[in-house]
Amino acid sequence: MALGAGSLFAFLGLALLVRFELVRALDRLAARLANRLDGPSVELVGELLTETGRIELTLPLALVTAALLWWRARRLVAAAVLLVFATVLVEVLSKELLFVPRSEVAEAVRTHPRRLPIAIVRIFADPDDAPYPSGHMARAVFLCGLLGWAVASRSRLRPFRVFVCVGIVLFLAAMGITRITEGEHPFSDVVGGTLLAMALLPVAWWLLERDRHTSHTSRVGRCRPFGSRRATPDP
Image (cartoon, rainbow, N blue to C red; front, side, top):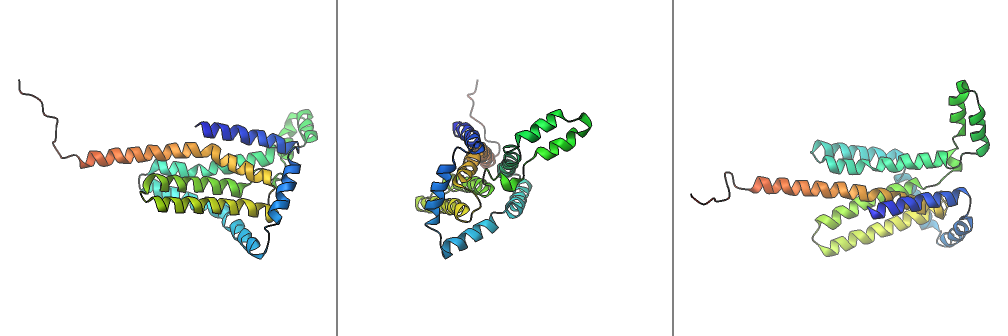
């Protein structure tokens, strides 16, 4: 859980740096470096990752997966998968509230109580103007974290585990780089999405570990011979 707490504080700290535009120089440097890799193949990969990582596709798939797991009595695993919705909730709140203009906040404070709901709606920023964090990156890191844990904890073939881990690292690197080359997000947004996912992954891993422990205990109970008891000495 220390990883989750540290990632959450880092996410909030980076949000403040982004809000006050203190990382623009780093974002420009990362953009120049990423654009050196740009080309037809990178552009194609970027477009593919953009489309497959959209919220309209990933969230329904996560919901269907969680429903199937729940139906198979794997409720803890289903809950871990559904935590991807938490990344979306934090992403939306961050994008809407982080860049609220001060003038609109002051206007909402001075407004008449009857018009307060309208004033509150107006203070929300346009998500297009407030991209922090990258939702694509947050969902990719979170779901890849679940996949990595499942492979590492269940597969006994070390080459297969290494193959999957390398594939996950390459996939996430491609996702992050193409967010920049496609002009979707600056480098700070990509890091913010990664930190958001890392803040939630320890909770998901804990749920998966609890499910594995529960399943193992259940299997051991079913395998015990019927009527077997510990021998007790005769009086």
